[in-house]
Image 1 (spheres, rainbow, N blue to C red):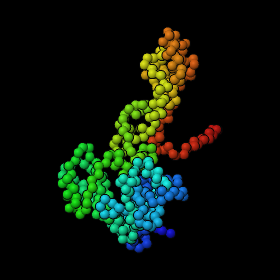
Image 2: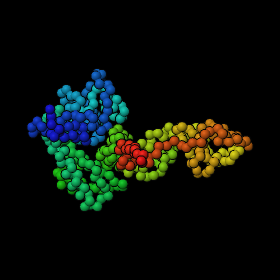
Image 3: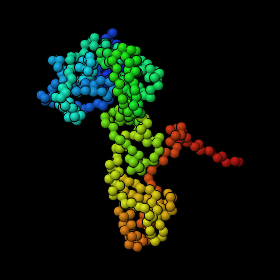
Image 4: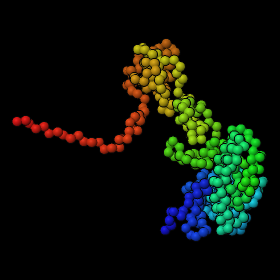
Amino acid sequence: MESNENIRYDCFRGCTVNYGNGDMPDIKYRQSCCKLEVHNYLKGINQEQFNGLYEVRFKNTRKGIYVNASGQSVKTGDLVVVEAASGHDLGIVTLEGPIVGRQVRAKGIDTENPPLKKIYRKAKPFDIERWQEAIAREEETMIRSRELAANFGLEMKIGDVEFQGDGTKAIFYYIADGRVDFRQLIKDFAEEFHIRVEMKQIGARQEAGLIGGLGVCGRELCCANYITQFQSISTQAARCQDLSLNPQKLAGQCGKLKCCLNYEVASYMDAHTRIPKVVEPLEFQDGQAWLVKTDILRETLWFSYEKGSLEHVYPLSAEEVREVQRMNREGVKPETLRADVESSGPEFVTAVGDDSISRFDPEKRKKRRKHRNKK
């Protein structure tokens, strides 16, 4: 039975590192903590044209499709040494078989021009040891790189550092609103850390995906779980869904508008086409009825005889409102709104009292007092 004290969970790379078996760590692929995980629903199916293709995962969301040129049998979960622009890198095989072909078509990867990079071999103990030494340098390098960037007064933020598997190169992920001249900074990085430097700019949403976390819904952030392409989001999506334009509620952890605002926009826009536009109050024989609330998905409109009041409101379906508008244009006024529909309020759940610290306490039973008859 392995002790949990010796196991370290590296969720940035989707693996566990166990130091309980001596100096050499035992590294195993842990699929459950892998960001942008893809379920292999074609497992067990063999297709010859995809036998040599594998998806290899590195830190955070960086993945790549590689061709096996090692002659060794490679399977999901293996640590492999792969070709890089300079030197070599080390990653974990996350997909194999026909599902890799689906990923190639989905991402629009041309496997012929330029040719795919190669898998050199399975990782040896020396490769794994060197890889872990490079990983141990990442946090210290990130802190020092932020200090060097602050000394130059550059308006940029270094969000993460990823070392290559052989420890000879590092990718510095940074965030900046405008153009940044970091030519001298790269020279200082190379002299300070004795590595080749690559600067890669990312956005605020991509940074949130790298860091991860939980949203207000209680689930993992969408950008850290499955989103790879970020679409533009505007306040028009909130207006379409009749949401309050409160920046604190509409913004996510990245400080930008939440990605989930776009999820139901199509349904709301479709419902809007079936809801009549009410500009003026509806005319009835007993008075004017003003629109106070619209339930877009249920296609129900709520009216009140008092403008802006929610005390006595009456619901009408979109078809009924359209019929009343037609009658008003012809000069006909329906008898009343009260006779057809019973007065009620819009359905909502109140949160009053939910923050009381005694809401979970059992109710105390009242003791019955025995009244004795006085003699």
